[in-house]
Each structure stands twice: as C-alpha cells, then as structure tokens.
Length: 392
Image 1 (cartoon, rainbow, N blue to C red):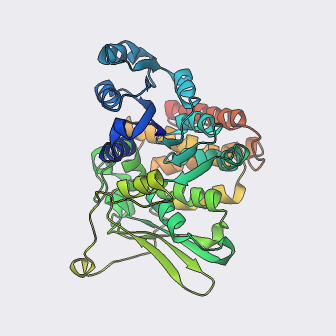
Image 2: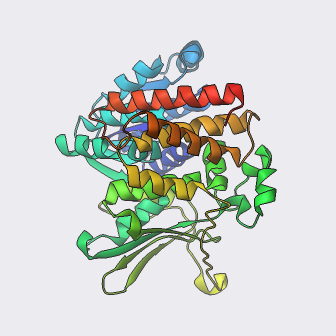
C-alpha cells in the first residue's frame, strides 16, 4: 500500500485529491499518513476519520482542542501549529500532495523531500520563492517533483518523450479571470466580491483573486522558468477564455503540442497521483464539435502589470522571487481587508521589489531555506508597514 500525505487537505486542491483517493479505494487501497488543514476542523476530522489517517494537523494552534474533540475515539492523532506541520512532513510517505497556500507550504515540502518522496506540487510559492533550492533538495534525496498546476502538468505531459533542447517555446494559457474585458478605469473600482467570482474554475478566494489580477499567471511564468529551465524569453502567456487548452509546447521544427481538457483540477491531480500510469478520471470529456471554436488573445500588460513584474523577477532571479511572493501575499491581504484597491496590489508589489532591490543584492541566490524565509519575512514586514501608513 502506498503511503500518502495531503498537506492542505481542506482546500480546493486537497478536497479534489481526497475525492480521487476515495474513488481509488480510500483507506483500503492507501495508507494515509498525514492530513493537514486550516480552520475547517469539521472537514479535516471527517477526512481523517474516513481515510483512517495516522495524524491530522491544523495549522492553527488555537483550534487543537476542537480537532482533538472531533477525532475522539477515532484513533487518529491530533496536532497543531507550524512545528506539527513539519513533524507530519517528516513522517515517511511515498506520495505527498503539497497544497498549502502561500509561503507556509515551503518548509513542509522541503521536509517531505528528504525521504525520497514523490512530491505533487500545487504550492506555487515553493518554486517562485525557492525554486533552485527545492529542485536541488529533490536531487539530493533522489526524490521526484511532479507539477499539479494545470498549466505545468500540461507542459510536463507534452514533453513526455521529448528532449528539452528541442523546445523552442512554452505557452501557458490564462482564462483572463472575471476582468479580462474590463477597462483600466473599471479595474481601479473592482470590488472584492467581483474579484472573488471566477467564470470557469471553482477555487478558493485567494487564488481566484490572483487569477483576476493575473498574479496567478505571473507566478506560473516564474514556475515555468524554474521547473523546466526554459529561458524567460521563450515563455509566453496568452488569454484563452474557454480554459480548455492548458498549455502548448512549441518545438524547433515549428510543431505545437497542446494539452486540452475540461477545467477540472482532478485531471492534473490524478495524473500526478497515478504517474507514470494513467487511470480513468471523473472529468468531463470534450466534445469539440459542440464547442465549435477556441479563442486566444494577447494579455494586456497595462491592465495586468503582474505579468511585467514576473518578467522583472525572472531577470533578477536570486531572492527576487521570495520578495515578489511575499509582497503579493501582503498586497492580497490588504485588498481582502479593504485597505487598498484592486490595482493597488500591483503597485505595492512593484514598490517593494524596487525598494528591496536597492537595499540588498536580490540577484544573489539564497543558499538555504532559512535565507529565503528571512527575505520573505523582511518583505512582509515592509509591506505591512506600507499598508499601515497608507504609503504604497
């Protein structure tokens, strides 16, 4: 029986992962080592009971009594807090889903790799903030990282049997979110409720807003650079409103290999779960004749400056990704709290990148995860200071 851990089990990626584990036999087919979540204690406890997990961990120490009460009599161990997340990641597992949102997912991912684990990576921040370190850690322990973002899973699949030196370009697609046709003046007035509704995907609030601002796509540009080693000038993004083509890989002979599928994260999750085999998945099959057409358009870097900022980060490299991610998270917190406007998020990220570039050599590659987390903490502190003073 394969040993499985799911970090971020109560989020959208985690819930879809649990659904696939259930469909493939659940506790009878897998040995579930650890499940972790946030404040949704009822769901976390129900998942842990159903799958007979060894341990369930909430990231919030104040919710530990509630988790213990919900698991009473189940035989499932309860734990809470950042240290407990690391301890859970240090428990040997054969396959680990890394789906904790934000920089909080970095340390558990690194800890899991030390057991030679297959890490199914849905945590964008790991590659954006610490890509070279993460890949080196995997190589050091003979571990494997499989991408779970739909775009990077698509690229990974399109590259099967191909040589990376034959790749001419990689094109990742963006739905454009709810604001793809909005004017700059409209974007300045966009509300939290409007930014939290995605036209194609059912996701958590934070990633939905990131999609609306295209910070999600900006992160994916950087991820593509780090994971596949593709030069930034060979990485493109196009707006594809139907969200059916997830990525395309262009080769030196002019051919394009496209990956198409319904907008359902269980496709990418299932591919990583069953790799290198393929199993039947409960996703919709495309009827191309009924669809009729697929549309594409160039993204507008003026209305969506996150894409330009991502290219600046790729040019600087080093610790710039850690600053970018931390600044983006602080800016998103500020928007959700109503302290800044929708377009102010990009302004805050740009100002923090500029300030920290002048204060220290961001192009110097961090030598450890501690270095990355230190840069992350500094960027967050500066960002929160900006929010508190209203100086973006």
